[in-house]
Amino acid sequence: MSDLTLLGAAETAAVIASGEVSARDVASAHLDRIEQTDAAVHAFLHVDRDFTLAQAGAVDQARSDGAALGALAGVPLALKDVFTMKGAPTTCGSKILEGWRPPYDSTVVERLKAGGIVVLGKTNMDEFAMGSSTENSAYGVTRNPWNLDRIPGGSSGGSSAAVAARQAPLAIGTDTGGSIRQPAAVTGIVGVKPTYGGVSRYGLVAFSSSLDQGGPLARSVLDAALLHEVIAGHDPRDATSIEAPVPPVVAAARGELGGVAGMKVGIVAQLQGEGYQPGVQARFAEVVELLTALGAEVVEVSCPSFDYALPAYYLIAPSECSSNLARFDGMRYGLRAGDDGENGVEQVMAITRAAGFGPEVKRRIMLGTYALSAGYYDAYYGQAQKVRTLIRRDFESAYAKVDVLLSPTTPTVAFPIGERADDPIAMYKADLATLPSSLYGGPAMSLPAGLGDDDLPVGVQLMAAVQRDEQVYRVGAVLEATLQQRWGGSLLDRVPELATGGAA
Amino acid sequence: MPALDRDDIAHLARLSRLQLTDSELDQYGGQLDVILSAVARVAEVAADDVPPTTHAVPVVNVARPDVIVPCLAREDVLAGAPAAEDDRFRVPRILDQEEQ
Image (cartoon, rainbow over all chains, first blue to last red):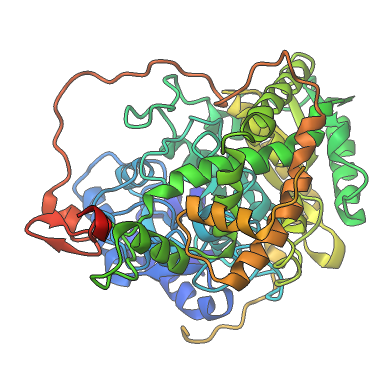
């Protein structure tokens, strides 16, 4: 068998199911690849070879016992370190949880295990998912496999880098304001934020509860759909989980729901033009042309409230964060500092939190505390929630006219590591195009559209109405097939070969 | 929008249970001012008659069946605690000296 790390998830599942290779062989090949390349990329915070091989061995055993196995049984996956999993630490990229081993599995992990998916390890992220570059991790930056001096996006930057570097065919990320889609865009892979409530948040360490959503990262639209189907569905342990069937995402990705001919695609006037790099605009224009050539009806739609998505998001998310992160008080889990027998509990909490949280988390906790405080609540948090209503109305009136909306995923290609580290507002602008659908709650996909400025990947974003996740897969699959025909293969074939050395 | 002075930032840090150094107070003060003036733009939107949206997909009164399910094992939970004693979390004193 040639290099197993070159295969996508569906292909990997097929060669395992055929008996050509074992799940153990596949896991081993990816563990070797991680060992060879992660000194350069630093996608992973935790890898445990024995733990991974034991999972793979169990899948092989179940197969030889004749058990019915899932569509992705034996396929390896990189898990963002914000989901709890027994037998491994969960840090959320923060010193305040260094070494914490959760006593329970998240629902996402339970479903991965039930599907026979093999977890390779936990991936790096911006601390508590706050950031767009993975530079806010307490455990060092992750590098973009396309150019090691560039960011891999964030906050799911370890997950995107692992998939682009062929360390894993699949990864799980979370998206609060763009943290799956933006990393997927800047590393040339597919990333999907499902409809809010589509994937359980149980065991996902909360940042902004009304926005957080787990979802798949993969090398193809079909692979993303297969993983989406494994992790999605109602969970009584998450009160905001949607009690309805999972939209037919796999059928859509396989083209079984039809192509794009006759579909109506809306171009959002507010999500293009000024502020978007020339290379991003050029790739976006090509995709629009392509859709027209394929028979879709492309129209421009105006969503004026989207201009206020960024300020609304940076009030709502920090407000919810300041409340959610109050649980990290040094009493029940994680770090405790200053417990010298003299300091009282309030002092110990303040010392612990000052020592355990990084600068961006501190900024957002204070910003949220301010926005929620008496006298400012109506002007900030209350007003932001009203803007959220207006954004939802813009989406609803757009979806009354079109099936999907289209925009660039990010204004620029991957920026250099360090470039925006001291400028929070510049960093926040990386999420300009992804924030509206987060505030609305609808599904959204980022899909590779080619290379832009500095020969780095550009992504386009497909958005659809709440619970119409299949629509983004349907259009995404057609676009992917047409673009790959034009490119003569996957965009990822062009990732420069990484220096392979021993692990650091 | 009132600019945040040093005392405001120190007050926010106290409310946030963050023991910050003087140089951190200065650093965050400047940054929070910049961020707040950027997000204050939400006030430009005329929205007096607009109801707030608290959740993306509205759900009301979600209840589960009233069935007892096992909780986590005590030793598993305490294994992750920074300090434990007598099968409980050990915490620093919760009252000030003068209150004791």
